[in-house]
Image (cartoon, rainbow over all chains, first blue to last red; front, side, top):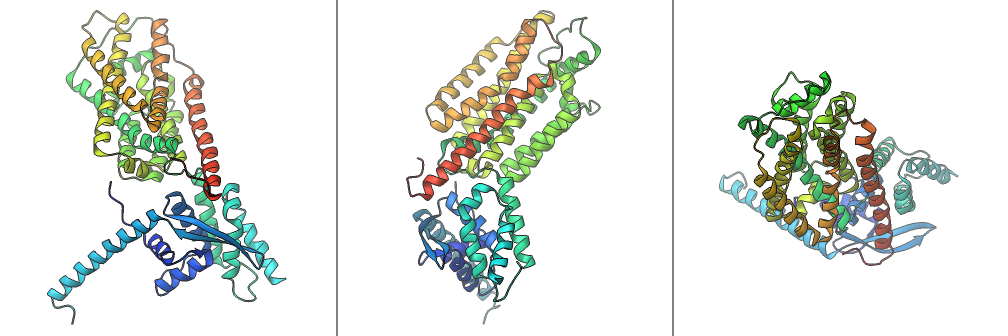
Length: 110
Length: 342
């Protein structure tokens, strides 16, 4: 059966991991940056989402490091995660293109 | 000093999470929280406190963290879609039988007491679907099971779980079980609801179940559920024959539906999730065994609640315990880099 549309935080977390593996705090700052400050995830919400995405096989644990005595676990997009993110990005892009085209046709855009 | 006080307070908040979750994420969550803290900050901010407490509550309610591809958890997820179908199937069959007035009501032995007589009459006239004045819980359950099916169809795990809990609570506290010795549909409701609750807690729920089901397999499951329900209804009729006047029993229909159920079981046994599903269905035959035992001994006294509820309760708790251990083990294996289950 077809993939369901993603919720925005899920989309943003996967997008944050698209270029390179990231640790928890790196994902938080990347999500804030990608959404231009509009979405600010907190630790509880982030790790609930990461746990769910691990379970769903969309991300994997890449490696662990100890920095200044603190654990840093890096997460990476899995091949299934890549596929789902790409499908969702294409779906959003198609919707946005359709909206812009119709707005142009109606003369709402310059 | 400020850092350690803040760390201690964060750790106190993180203690609200389940132990398994803390083992997995506590250190990195703490690192993230401390990295995001302002210089000189001594206490967690209110938004952080709310976020951590809500997150901890969610994790505790979730109980089990199943892994897709785990055949047991997947079978339970399919069951969360199929169980409401079985319940609705039972309600529809009862309604159709009522509308068709088929087969006729058998006689009830004179030795049967008034309470049990009322229950037997309700069963044979199928009043428990249509008769609103019959208010000892069955009407509510007939509606709850339909709502349960809708919730499952909409993939709403939390709603389905709440409806299951309400239905079970109503069944127990309304005193319905006092009269249900002669109405095995009640035991069917009860066991279905108990297993549904366990399956919802131990799997990813109807959302995952529907992902696994194709239209073809869903059609087969619905057909098998209908056959099971019809077959079961007529088995009950056959079992009761000894009490009533001689009536023509649809033995051919019983034989045909039984064959469909057996073929479905053989097909299901070929796959691993199918084997789990068959064992869940087998649990549902417990009330039939109880009921046929009572009829065979010509003893229709109400069966004690503990006898009805304990075995399915043990099965339900067993499902959750096994699923929890399995998910913890699979989670550890996945995190340590070993291959995930096929």
